[in-house]
Image 1 (cartoon, rainbow, N blue to C red):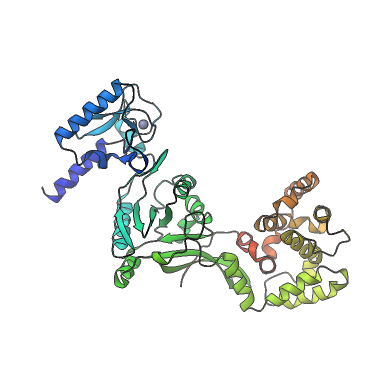
Image 2: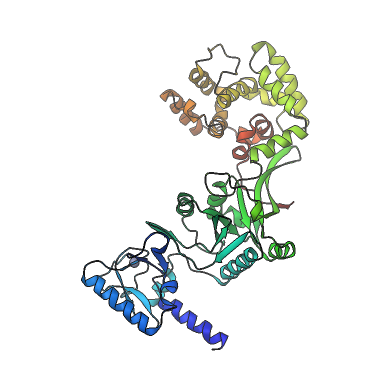
Length: 452
Ligand SMILES: [Zn+2]
């Protein structure tokens, strides 16, 4: 048979089959959910006929052998055109794989419940599989496999053995519908299968799309990429490489911004210590940030500023440290900054981040909620409310803002009021003081990729 004929037959088969995965109630575990191609394609006519009989008998006896992988309703084996599974005439109306009495065009768009594959997607899948194949660390590389872990199944783009473990890969393109990211990640995590999301970004702006954001924020500001170039590098070295893209800080023109840093990374060198079964970052954003702070020599100023804010008698010292930083960092000068009481603010924000009293107020160490309420009430400090919330969250201290209902009310009130955007205006100094919150303080998704 010529190649083009084989391909067109393949297409006919695809277009016939709207049920892509079935549940085989006679099988357990990894054999329970099967792709329809894996179930039917190898069967000869006589075997298909016997399978039809057995399905018929199982239905008569009241226990259907095969169920639709999507809605879990019984299905039958049809021979019209190419062999395929179909819902019964009284089948579920709301199953996206149920084609009975529906217009073919509607079926076509809904067919794969958002899983329809573009030519680009197919090419990248093949590229990934061939890249894994050259690496001796990988074996059993499969591209059309249904991963069956009852009561659920998934169909990753590629799955391969890596030593005793399995790694599943999904490729997400900007042009296709975004799947439910969270559910997929949970599936692999709960079945102890390692999981990597891959993208192909020709345009960095695409990374701002919500679906992509869901992927990399779940993975500490990290995502992976595959393209022809990295595949070529892999072939030259004889190991499978991907690009890792991580959100990292960059200090430019006196202020911090975040950028995407792209570097080749060998898949066998990934760190799998995270409980999420997804690759851990080599270095967290906060650590990258601390590195910046230390190479610029701001460690010292940071400590001095936090210490001075604990003692009313050291206000003047606080002011001098601030003034020494004005020139290096694009922050308001002391005269301007004073309107927003930086001395009190640094004390209270440090108190929240540390969960212990580090401010200069007269409250006792066990009166942190009172310290916060007093801060939220002062007119000059109300503009810091959004910053306070950001820092509490980054340092896992949200409960400090929830102990008293009066705190909750004050926060709500302050956020409703109109205040200047202090978070942006004081960004560099806030990031230096609270590196763990730097990623959230910077906020925006980077718009620039820097190759390592
Ligand atoms: Zn169904």
